[in-house]
Each structure stands twice: as C-alpha cells, then as structure tokens.
Length: 217
Image 1 (cartoon, rainbow, N blue to C red):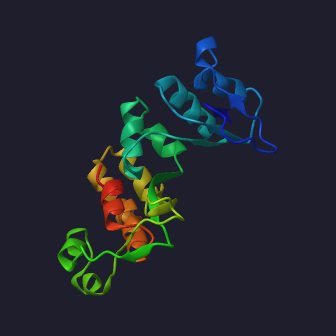
Image 2: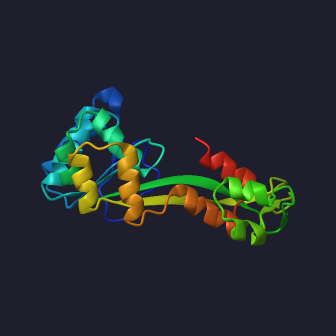
C-alpha cells in the first residue's frame, strides 16, 4: 500500500508512508511496487495523471488495484478519470467496480423519538411514494447523557456500488454522457446513494435533517 498517512497497521501487508517532500510520491511508490510483482496494490489517493497512468497500467497487467478519488458519486468517477486524461478504452479495460460512500451520523438509540416536523409532503419531495409516505415514521435524537447531548452516536455508511458491466464498458468506449451511463447503471440494478440513505431514514437510523445534510451536494 502507498498511504498518506498510514492510519492502521495491517498484518501481512507491506505499507509505505508517502513523503512528497523527499520525492516519495504516490507515483514513485507505485512504480516501485510494480518491480516487486505484487498481487494486490492499494494507492491511498490518485491525485495526478502520472499516478493514474501507472495505476491503470498495473490494472491492465494483472494486478488488482484499489484507490480513491474525490467525486460526488460512482458514475462521476468515470468523468473524473476522463478529465485526468485517461483514454476511454483504458478506463473500459481496467475498471471493474466503483464504490462511492458518504458518512451519516446515526441517531442515538437512547434518546430517539419521532420527528413530528416531517410530514407526508416532505417525504414525497425526496422520492417516497404516496403509500410509503403515509406509513413511514422518521426519527431524531433529543440529546442525552449517552450521546453528550448531540442526539447522534456513531455513523452509518451510505454506499453506492457501480459494477462495470459490458454495457457500461461499451458506453464508456462510445463516450456517452454521464446521464446515459447513469440510466444504463440503473437498468443494470444500481442502488444509488440517495436510495441507500432513504433506506436508513426509513429504518430510523438517520434523521431527516441528516439525510438532507448528507445528500445535498
């Protein structure tokens, strides 16, 4: 792994701390990794074209490569790679799966109560059906000693997993719009972060205010 910083020590994993001030960048570290013929490589973050070019090369030569990018959702990752100068045919050939995530504050279960300010109209405005909005109850945390008065304790992950299917590979090669790729992904079964967050809201794990904070970009 090439990390900046190393946050957890992992048994059986060779971890390298990136130090750009001495020239030990993600790109130079990744290039060094390839000379050691690893099976799995993790690059903490792709920040420039040099790093992404080496990561793509590694993926195309039989290595399983994990990395991170800052984007709004899974499909935006493809646009980000294109903007970094990666050719569509290389993205189509090297990309297997994209996981997008955001973190939401979980309602404290010790002071959880029904949020009466969220009505049916509000629920319909974020995509719930008329039938769903009549039966869903939303909750919030009142604040207690258990959560130090915050009303929240812990976090829930909001995820979106985009599998790069053959149809999406073809769409990337044809340089179609992000909206077209989103439509194809939806047809292929993509559950968006919004749908995931709605599920947590419906389960009473996050408040409506937290849903709104996390999902409004």
